[in-house]
Image (cartoon, rainbow, N blue to C red):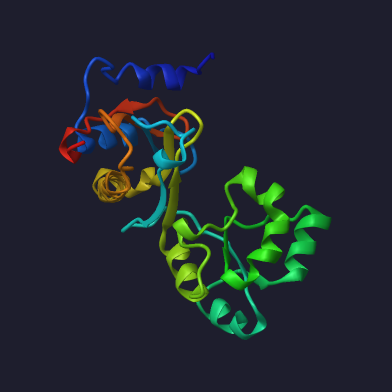
Length: 231
C-alpha cells in the first residue's frame, strides 16, 4: 500500500523498535494527526485468544470518561409506553415495525447505535442480516438489549463504546479525537484497557495482551507497552 508524503514523514517520527508508554504514544499520535479535519484516534489491541471458540470470546461495552467526540445518533425499538422515556433521554429515532420497514424498504441507516427492549427482539431479529454485518445488532452484553432503554440511550450519548474481537483476534475501538489531547485520550484509553483485561475469558491461556497500537485516522500506528495492565 502506497502512502502519501505526510504519512511517510509522520512514520519517520515513530521508533518501531520500542514500545511507548501510553502517554508518550498518544502525544505522538496527536502530533501526527495533521489532516484538515479532527482525526479520530483508535486503539487496536491484539489478544491471545481464539475467537473461533465460544469460551474465548471477548465482548462488552464501556463508557469513556471523556466521550468519543462524535455526535452519536441512537435508534430505539420499544413499545409505545416507553417512547417518551427514550425521547427524553435523547433518542434520535424511536419506533417499532415502522422503523423495521423503513430500514428494509428504504435501506435507511442514519444511526450509529441501536437499542431495543427485550420484548422487541423478535421484531428486531428480522433485521439481523442488515444490522449484524455492520455491528449494529443490539446485544445484552453491550447493554443495548435492556428494559431500561432510557439509560442505554443516555450512556450511548455520553460516549459508550462497544468492544469485540474481529476474526483475527483484534479489538478496534475509537478512544476520542485528536483535539482531546494526550491527557484526555489516555484517560479513555486506560478505561478501555481495564475493561478488556476484566473481560479476559477463563479459557484464555498464555499472554492475554499480545500487542497494542494507537493511531489517528490518517496517521501511522504507534506501538504501546501494555505491561502496566498486568496480563
